[in-house]
Length: 57
Length: 422
Image (cartoon, rainbow over all chains, first blue to last red; front, side):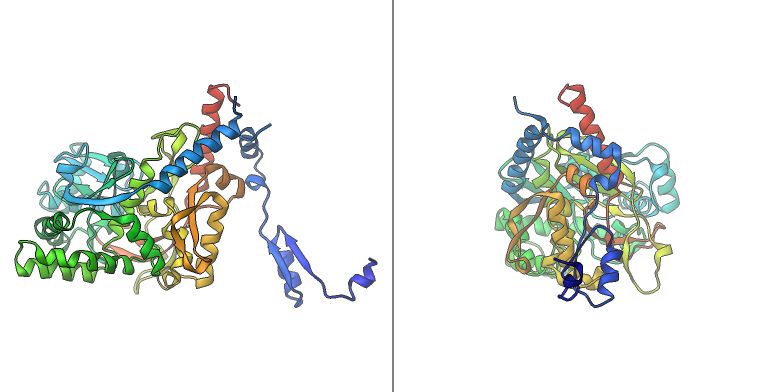
C-alpha cells in the first residue's frame, strides 16, 4: 500500500513501549492501543543474564 | 536428566498443588504462651523479617512497649523502652514462629491467639486477635485504653470464642474467604463481608456458651464494631496455606512477604528460611483528617501474606469499594488484579472474581517473572504513624522493593551454580 493511500483510511495504531508516543497520537483523536512492553529486567544486563541461565538452552 | 527449566517448572507445579489444595481451618483459640512454638514470658514476636531493637521503627517500638506494659513487665513507656533496649527481651519474627500479626504484629505471652490447622498438610499457624481501628497496639499505640482492651480480650473475648469454637467445631476458612471474595471483600483492607459471615456462623454458639450475658453481649458488640475482625483469620489462613509449600527444592515461588516497618522481606520456597530484605517503601494513599505524608511510617505488617496467597491487593477486582479507602477508581482495582497474572504461576481454583467472569485470583508469585517483567506485587494496606503511641493515619497502596526479588534471583542462581546445574 502506498503511504498516501494509508493516510486516506482510518488509522489503526498499536504502540509498544514508551507511553508518550501513544499519548501524542491519542491527543490528535486517533484511537491507539498501548502495549505496556518493557525490555527483560528493564534492560539490566546482569539480571537478564541470571534469568537466561534458568531457561532451557 | 531434566534441564533446569524443567526442574523449576516441576518444583513450582508441586508448590502450587500444595497451595491450591491447602485447607486452612480454625480449630481453637489459645494463648500465645501455650500455643506458639518458642514463646516465653520474655519473648516478643513482631511482624516482618527479624529486626534489632535499635533498627525498629516508631510503631513497632510503640507496640512492643504496649506489650511489655500489658504483660506487667514494665509500668510505663519509659520503663518499657529501657527494658526493650536492655537485651533481656527475646525478639523474634512472627513468621519464624508459625505466626503472623497485622501492622506491628506484636505478640506476647498472655495474648489470646487464633489456632489454625491446615487439614491437608497438618501444619499449624497462629495469629493474635484484632483490636479494631484507631489507637491500638498493632499501630504502635500504648495508652491505658489500649492496655485495658488487651486485658479484656485476654479475659473475655478469647475464652468466649474458644468455648464457642468447641461448641461449633472446626471452621473451614478457605470456604469463608472464597465467599468473602464473592461478596466484595478482598481479605486484606476490606473484611466487612467476612466479619459478617463469621458473626452469622458463631453468634448462636457464643450465645450458647457458659459466660455471663454481659460478656456474651460485649463479645458480639466488639465483633460487630470492627469491620476488620476477620483480618486476623484471613492472614493466618494465608500463612497456613503457604507454609506447607515452603522448602521445595528448585521452586521459585514466593511463600512469604512481610515488613517490620524498617525492612520488607521475602522468602522463596526453593531457598528455604532465608530472608531477602530491602528498606520498606512508603505507602501512597488516603490520610485520615489531620494527617499527611510527613506523619507516615514505612510499610509495616505481616498482612501482605494475603497478597502472597492470591487475595488482598491481588483480588482487588472483587472489591471495587476498596478504592474509597485506599484511593483510585474501580477500574484501577481491576487493572491491579489483571496485572498480577503477569507475575504469578496459576489461577486460584477456590478464590474467584465475579467481575472477571469468575477467573481465579493470581496465585503463586514467581521471582523470575517479577524480575523479568519489572511488575511488582500490589499490596493494599494500612498506614501507621511514624511515632510510637499515635496509631493509624490512613490506608493506601504499596509495592515491595524490587531488590528483594533481584537478590533472591541471584541467590537462586548461585545455589544452582554450586550444584553445577547452570
